Length: 457
Ligand SMILES: Cc1ncc(COP(=O)(O)O)c(C=O)c1O
Image (tube, rainbow, N blue to C red; front, side):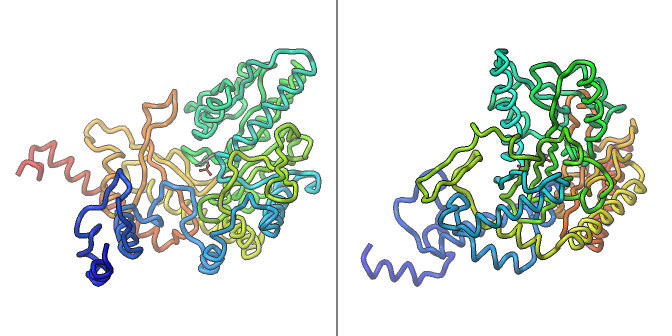
């Protein structure tokens, strides 16, 4: 390109430049560079077609933080969390954070606990599962027993990360089906699922499908009984992706954490009710001895000798700073205030949605600020929750409908995940839209059944 041609490109108004005036390539690298602002505009414009994150009521992940957090994020986006020797204070803040969590979760001796940050709960759950598997293998080898058939016991309503763990790391998943009588894993018939090859049981604090807590203490009591009759000593990992940052503040008397000796490890998503933007999870073991040394790598090529236990190597360090910021900013009372308000919004919405008419609540947001509902059976109704989901999407709201897991797949539910950032006022706008769209669907339904559908004109 000659100098004159380049100047001409720069002078062109933005939407008349190559890349805007012609389509940008999607599947091949463009042969030539384009101006940074043209590239910015193309990417920016395409991303406008994404949903509005704040109206995404399908996700558990934070979509709002205070401006100071945004500022901190912008100051720290270039820090790599793995470069612990280069960014020792980021590494130190990572340690403050998991120690704070060990304390919050009633570790008997936080100074003996061990933990780390991860990209999210998925990675954290995998690390918890790997520690179970390796401890079990080491114990079995020492006893001269086979180690080729490990299994993990979990509810059929686990989040997909546990299915991935079992698939990727060759562990047999033993799913305990949920049912209308046992809506969560509660210890019922647990003895039928565990044996000498069971590496652990997962208890979920805030089942993804519905938000309900699994009763960790009850599951532990059942495992105590099993131990008394069979000698099997089976540990629990609590998948507290959301609930581990709700229960300590909203249900402080609920015993689900390291107060139960059988709970070896707990994970949470910093980026869910930890109130940090996406990209952060945490896992903590009640004592360092529960994390087999053989899983910890000591890398020296970054300077210093840093122990690491993680699936990733490089990843953003900024979220760690944001988590520490959130801990300082909110403190215990601040987290309690934020989570309580979010619970109030969720419970209000559940109560109001129940009043609309066609819905039965599956649960009413008593555990985490999440709840689901079903359609009441009605042979005359031709619309489904998927239709309602589509109608709400036209207004910008993303409220998913989906089938329940195995055993209950004939039941379709719709779920709302309420997060910090959906205040009471916005919740009222959502309710208005749900009421309006239900009335619209009912009206269409009535028109179709009487042969007078608008679609027919
Ligand atoms: C119970 C549970 N476990 C694990 C995960 C995975 O978490 P992340 O998205 O942080 O990887 C989720 C996500 O919704 C979840 O609800």
